[in-house]
Length: 93
Image 1 (cartoon, helix red, strand yellow):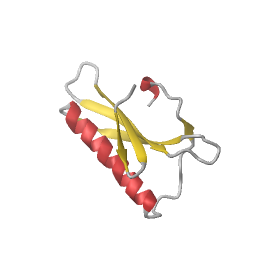
Image 2: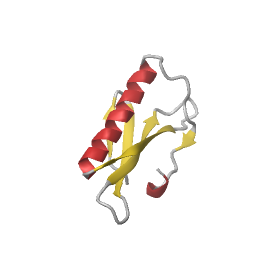
Image 3: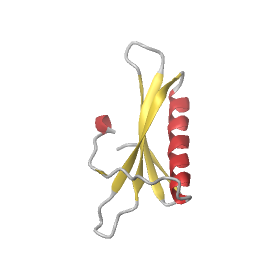
Image 4: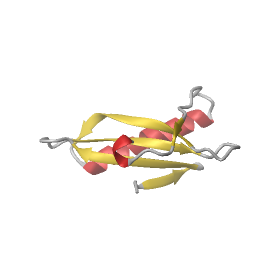
């Protein structure tokens, strides 16, 4: 199971990993949207294009990007919602 936190009614999950044969860390995160009227949960992917010297820095950056996306969507600044099912495995996230 992926680590997660709750933020403004949304669940944020993330996965960080060290780059092979390198000292840098990177990762991915996703915002899990509340279930719609049919009970289907959707996710919005958050990618981490940067490299970090520690797992904590990578995690914090991904969580901050996810929170920013949630805040922007609540303010009406995000018009596109990705419609991925919440059936991703750790490697797919």
